[in-house]
Length: 588
Image 1 (spheres, rainbow, N blue to C red):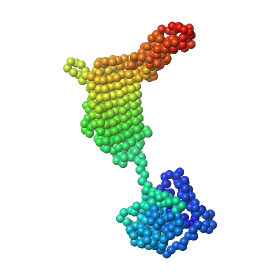
Image 2 (tube, rainbow, N blue to C red; image 1 turned 90 degrees about the vertical axis):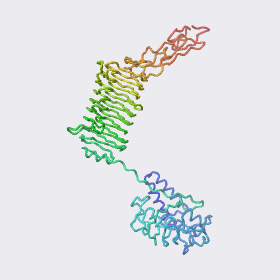
Image 3 (spheres, rainbow, N blue to C red; image 1 turned 30 degrees about the vertical axis):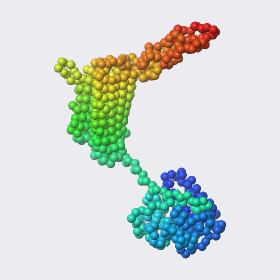
Image 4 (cartoon, rainbow, N blue to C red; image 1 turned 180 degrees about the horizontal axis):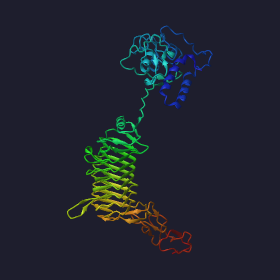
């Protein structure tokens, strides 16, 4: 039960807490229970019983001394002999001690209705947790001509009229909106007790929650344009026929377009156009969306058959680009320029063509990240039928991908030769890292699989098969070919890549997992173990266990043996696996 003397301020304070903590319901019960206990524990009474007598008789309310201190006057709290002062009650608790006899001579803050600078009218008493109804209505009310409380930060219709909890007699709410909202004063966390009360600031207005992007559906180009303009999440529910000029997105960020049934961008009948162009920092992600039959146009200056990305970011997941052509430009499927970032996973690029990069082109410092991407039957006239990466700062990272039947047709020169570079990949003044990637039946006159010039290339676990005119062609490039095997292990590889300009062997067709060297052998002195032959037998007097990276010499009093239970004192000359204690004074 709550005593009548603290019921009104307690209700208002609980309302503040309830509104401020509406999104933290689990904490609300604990806070509310703690608040009731701390506020009224000293004066709780059973419902329906008379209020118990206080230690000091409650003084009668004096004519000019209002009850503004949690249901009592300053006069009351001062006569309890707890050591309170009028200035303390006014500054820390927000009480109005004006005209209280015990405070005669104090420099009060004029909180009551005597015409001071507190923003209230003269006849409006401070009966709402040390403030007036006008004060709270100005902070959190709505302009409806009444003293009301609509919740912290203006969230409407939570608590209704203030005079349900406070005495609003003589208050002129909504009649004089101040030029600026008053600053909320601290409110005591508990009623006055034998110790000085702790003050707690009023809760700040709750921030307006950030709205979730709406999801819009588009079944044609006009609906797609409208959805893109709203920056919504867009679901394609049908194929999109694209007019001349294609879909152009400039500067918009965090745009997501997806389809559950592999909706496809296609040009309108009789139209040749790039299907999608991104400019000026656009960030767009596609999922489950295909592109088919795009051809470059004036916007792309001949670049980007299906997609052009300029100084922007593009992500494609679970997509397909088919029969895209940049003609004499670059990037039949996708052209990335001006420092763009393109990320692809689970993507098929097939039967696409260009002068450079029949499947994908990256230049001008652009970066490609390709995982589980297949480039099939792509063509170019000069470089990189599958992928071309050129210019300083441009790079490619490719994992678990494949180049199939990609062909550079080449340019015929005066001596009758054909200049064609990089059937699968052409790397010029750029860098690349390839792992677990295959090249099969790709062709070029220089580097059926890979062509590199003044580039940096790192290769691991490649698979090559049937590529024409050498697997690799290197011109003034740095490259590293590894089979990825830890010390003491080897990765079985069946092919050493052929090529021109190769100064170190480049292993291919390697096993997916490394094998451990057998006991008595190690890979000591071998940098890249690609066969069982790389596991070298330990010399006399030294031993190694399975998977050892070096052989250890047996100490005095032991001998090297291939049997840990050996006890005859005679060891083995080579391939020993254990150091065994000598059985007596001697051993061999």
